[in-house]
Length: 437
Image 1 (spheres, rainbow, N blue to C red):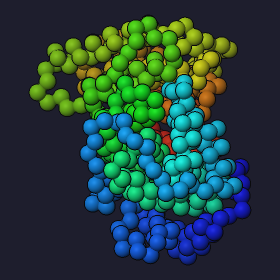
Image 2 (image 1 turned 90 degrees about the horizontal axis):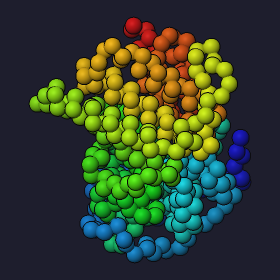
Image 3 (image 1 turned 120 degrees about the horizontal axis):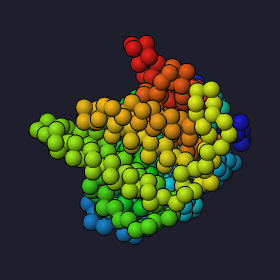
């Protein structure tokens, strides 16, 4: 358990006010905490309750820019450090930051974002908000939960201020917005997914950020893409940013694991668009042709992999028939889960079920579902486990018998209790499926 240092005055004020109202209304808490920390002449300004409100209400208007290369934002003063912030920054670098940087060998969020946070109150508070919230979910610590609300409120204020600057830099605003939307997913996972990712999407479009962008902007784009994809899988609809607009650039005979993982994110987003997209007016022949083409692309990706990427099986099968694999690089375990998820989608989900050949269908479905479970039940990193949540849902949906489903339910429950990543809704969906069968 992470123990907070001596509480700063702001946290004490915050705790007292939260206790006074019972901390039952999250939106009220955010608005009230912002008003506590703002000068009196700002109290008339409407306070946002989420990043969605920051970008969609008339609180601020985002300046139009044509290039992601902006001059650095000049901050009035660097953010102050205290024991709690240092603890949360270190926890971010050892925990959530690794999840975010799963497909980034250069670790931009653990390194570049943290360095920029020393000069950026926006990034500092966003890091602290997300980390405090995740820690509170794992340790069940009310103080860290209260601290998370405070840092989140501060982040929204700094986001409004930063977006209002003529030369606001996406190197601050985009990573911060992604971290804050991750916070919102932990707090309100059932909210319409558009509210979680729309802020980052607005910045990506406004600043011309692309998959091929360099440095922190490119890294942040790919984190957004994973978040957008995860929400698309939850709601069974295409990603908000269509994959044909990503401006991807691939190298032949690629060997870097992070780039191979990102290429699979792009392929899976294309598969999701085909699987869950609008089919009215499309012929069966065209849909089948698209399905075949996507399978071809997926096979080509798999065949291009270094041998170590696929993992090495070891040990006897479990009673449910799962076989563990060892992965030398953490991101490759997550990528293999997504690869088998891509095949499941192309075989049996959305428009694909009626397109697939029935004779080999069930065995292919079972093999891919079992492969996902086998990888996720192996000794893989926390970040890979978090990335495996959506593949695990689809694996449990299609795997038989019930004992295999129960094993995956237990793993999903463990991910939430030990890592603080919300899986409860997915578990309930799976259990309801069994009840109705």
